[in-house]
Image 1 (tube, rainbow, N blue to C red):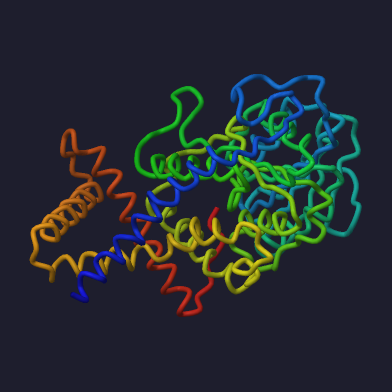
Image 2: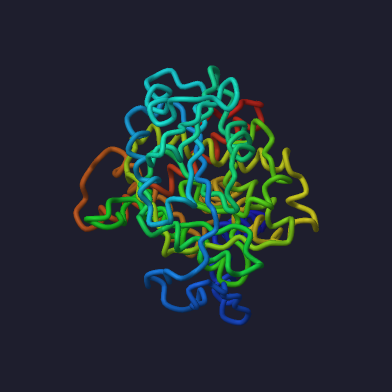
Length: 409
């Protein structure tokens, strides 16, 4: 009898995390929608891919970015930012080089050459487009969170655009994000990260499938409230809400803690799928696994850095627990489900055991690179599911052992 309780409790944890919570969000978005009042004249519940209204407000924006050893992509990223469809006189860029040991500092110096505002800060004073780039060169790495704090202090825009070096932002994305700030309730607006390339579209395999599900959850959260975290590669925030939102220097999930601090101040954090950045869907299995371990380790760290996230000070405490913390319990629930299924002889539990074993066998086939015809797509999804939950177990071990997760670009 006890094993039955274990089975159903474990099944409930897994089912709620992946099905129950999204279903509840869908229902809430229907009975209590909160569309964003955008400056284009359209609410967030209306047309999603229309061009922005050129007459809409264009506040001054500072794009901020922390980089380390990004010589391969930094020049392209700077040109990407400087050529966004936004008034040039209202867009500048602040880049912090966090102890780069390759040619990144030299490339940045080419964009900001002739003068220094402070001992480590170089600013370009020419009247070219590059005069909009300011850099802070750090000789030693202090971590991304520390770099973001420095970038925020150096910024002058009314709105800050946060981004990373590798991803390419679509030309009109910034305008589309800025439209959301016509709604005074909005404190931050997240764009959408697309895994793939603009020519061929977004991938539906592996991590791409997982990311599409994750984005749907964020879209539903935003439809009637605030998202739990933003897309670190593309999001904007009001400058006035950031002075009180500086990050602890060892923060792993800056793209969760910073927007949650904005929610704490009474503002909404919304998701706008019209504003897009593109990234490679395959950075290598080892690198992706390390990134996922770091992200999940960051969820544990958040409870140490910001215990208020579990208090009434967090207006979206329920969403935070359901979206972030329940995922941490899933791998242990899966293990309990498997063990309970082994010891329960009834047909229902035997069938469940068979389904689990088949699912894990498919994941192993995908990990081994074995092609199994029409089942390959299911096997790829199974592999991603197993890898993500394995990363959650490694993150838990790291948390218990007190190991710090390193910044994985």
